[in-house]
Length: 301
Image (cartoon, rainbow, N blue to C red; front, side, top):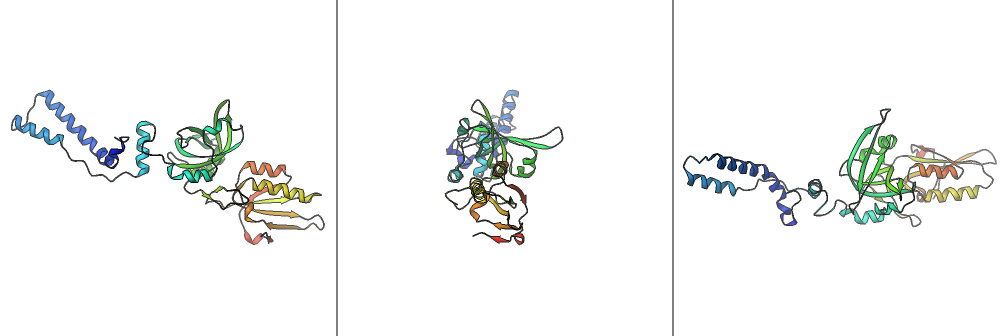
């Protein structure tokens, strides 16, 4: 009933609500036939009762929402019939430059990937230390799925969006792949509905969370070749676009003065270990701080 054809689309909720009564009626008739019992007024009355039972009206029921309909289809037969929960987000998924599960088979192990999909088999476990972590299956539009893991730190800070049937945008490190089944170790997860496309900066479009509140503070040490360091850091920031503001602390060699600058919005970034590792390789230190515009000494255009 939950996965019946499109012709019954508008009747499914009422049909489903009537199932119990119909089964009860059928069971009663079978018992009466087996026992040889008849109605009080003889066979004719019993036949009339049977005819009435066989033409029962449907129970009134509020029509299922599209989300409920698709969820029932998946639970009944293991796949969607009348559509897919991601259908309304096809354009957005393309703008977010997401990979598909099929793409993961050729992706480099340990590379960072971004996928959008529907959550199933969401499970929470405890480590030996008692910390909670979670794993789940993320299914894309093709119906293919990949295992995703939220280790304790990520689960504590990002796990609130994860649940069965949730539509998520996931970014993380690809563990395995090519010669083994891939797993995504999640750095960030967002509700696909809340994720949004920022204006393009230098040809780069990206998705961000509406809940982002931290600012990345980058400290530039005094350096003999400061312009080269600035260029390397700038390219690193542009390759990790996101919604977090950036502040620069620059130490001037001449007089030991430290200057704090806020660069242009094009340099807003997504949080994650890959960005921090890349900045460290560029020769600068970084830390996440709460935003405080009052501390900004000067602002870039």
